[in-house]
Image (cartoon, rainbow, N blue to C red; front, side, top):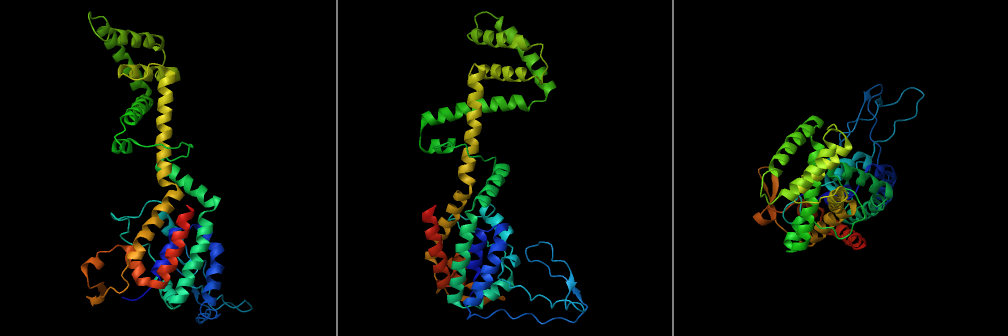
Amino acid sequence: MKRQIALGLALAMVVASTPVDAQLRGLIRKKAGEIVGGKKPEPAPAPPPATTTTTPRPDGADPAPATPAGGTAGSSPATPAASPLETSELPVRRSADHVLRGRVNARDNGDWDQLPAIPPAAVAAAYGLGEAAQAALVETVGAALKTLVMSPAFVAEHNKYIQTEHRAADHGLKGVIGLEEAMKKADVKAMEAIQAREVAAITVDQVRAMPAEMRKSSFTQQLADWKANAAKPKRSDQARLQKMIALAQPIESLPGNDEKFVRTYAVILSIDSGGPDTEAALFALAERATMEREQLAYDAHNLKAQLKRQLTTFVAIAPKVNFKAPTVEKNGQTVFVNAADERQGALWKACFRAGPGPTAAALKLARAWLAEL
């Protein structure tokens, strides 16, 4: 199997965003030149004059504006073609979104089904650097991307995304656990408290979700039923029904979209289901339930959590790669001889293709970064 630098490029794209491009472009070009002996990339031969061309972007972005390939009379010479290792030539943003925002199809061990797409020209250019230069490129790109991905601007952008996508928000709540975790711990007290908050939130949400006319119609019908049941002798729930009726009568004349009507109706339904019997208690529980849901979502999807998840996966998989695993050509493709190797995930195979040097460089960076998180 042809050795590639897929690992280094994949690692770089795991932690990239739009602001990365401008700052890294010169850095990668400079470093790539240094590690091959200080040589600058050879400019591409100029095509015949008066031919207008555009170059498609590999990441699907709009191509650069069309310009005469050979220039016009009196104009400056055409700019040399960009190196395929420049971040402007890579699908950096698309790959970052794919990995850091939970769109990776992970296996049971955390490995991926596939890597973000990497343009063949970039793979070939990186492969041509040689193993030592590849390792240096991984270190350079990784260090620069680490600085940028931990920047306040990147974090703010990510928080905005997870707020929209996952209803996640950081309320500063510590030690929040969900019902599933409480069940695993067999913490009965925690389970009861979580359920009580969730029932309160559901009651409030259901009342608010009703169209105003349906809300008023439902209330009117239920009030008639409550009065009829309360009039029956020897009912064990007469005290509860009388309390519900006492709260319902003052709002009987209010329209279904009145806020007082909405809040009082929610309290009445809460009493009917054995929940809080005051507006303050009910809405405090409902608000707490909402905050805890948002906090749990934030704890799961914030940038630090995503980085920990991906770096931990990489640190667990990379040391287990068998760089001597035999391969064979089959039906025009290079495959592993051993079925167990062929079943490995995309990160494992990327490490194999990159080789020991680049893998060790990436592993060193990942471990150090993980320790800081």
